[in-house]
Amino acid sequence: MTKTGPNWTELVDEAARIMGFSEPELLRARGTDLQILEYFRIISRGFTPLTIWLHSNMNPPSQALLSSSIHTELALLNKCNLFYTTNYDNFIERSFQLNEREFRVVAMEQDMGFQTDIAEIIKFHGDMNHPETMVLSESDYETRLKLDSPMDYRLSADVLGRVILFLGYSFRDWNVSYLFRLVNEKFQNSPLPGTGRRAYIVVPDPSNFEIELFRARNIDVIPIRGGSMEEDITNILRELRGA
Image: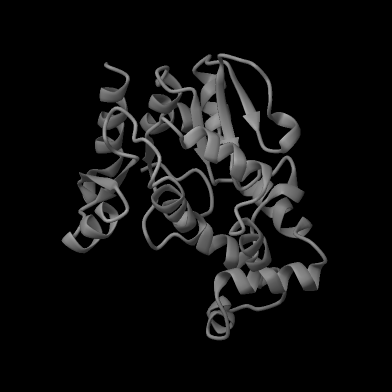
C-alpha cells in the first residue's frame, strides 16, 4: 500500500524528539503514547511544533494520491455521501478534488447543519487546518469518551438507519475502540438497518478470536488477505459502487 505520510508511531517518536528524547522507547517504558503526547502538550504549551512537522510530512504529490486505488475508489463511491475519518490529513479531500467529486468538510460544529446532497467528509478527530480540534493527547481522548460533543451527536444521528463500514481499524486502535461500544451499546435496542447488521469491518487474515469479539458487538468481519490488502479493499469498494 502506498505510504503517503507518517503513521501514529512516527508521530509520537517525533514528539519525543522535539522534547529532546533521542530514544522514544525510553519514554514508552514510562507511559503510553497518549501520555507522551499529553506531556508534550504540557511542555510545549500546545501542539504547534508537532502540527508544523505534520504539515511538512503529510503533503504527498497529487500523483501519489491518484495512484492510490483505495483513495480513488472512495472518491468514486457515489452511493455513499458520508465519510468519517479519524485522520488529521487532507488526503481524502484531495482525492475527491482530483477525481472531480464535490464535497464538504465537517470539522467543527459550525460546519454542520447545511442542507446538501453532496458528500461530507467528517473529520471526527479534527484536522490540521484547525489544530484546536485535533484529538491527540490523553486528555483529548478522555474528553471524547464522554460522547457529548457536537461531533458525537452528529455521529449518533448518522448511525441510525445506516450501516457502517470500518476500513483500516482493529480492536487495538484506541482512537476507534469507543465507536464499537457506541455502535453496540447505544444502539442495541434501536431498529437495525435493512441488512440486519449495524456495522462491518475489514480485517486482514482475521482469527476466530477477532471474528467472535466483533460478532458479539453485532459487527461482521469481512476478511481480506494480509499480503494483498490494497487490492482486496479496492475490490470491496468497487463492488459497493457496482463497478
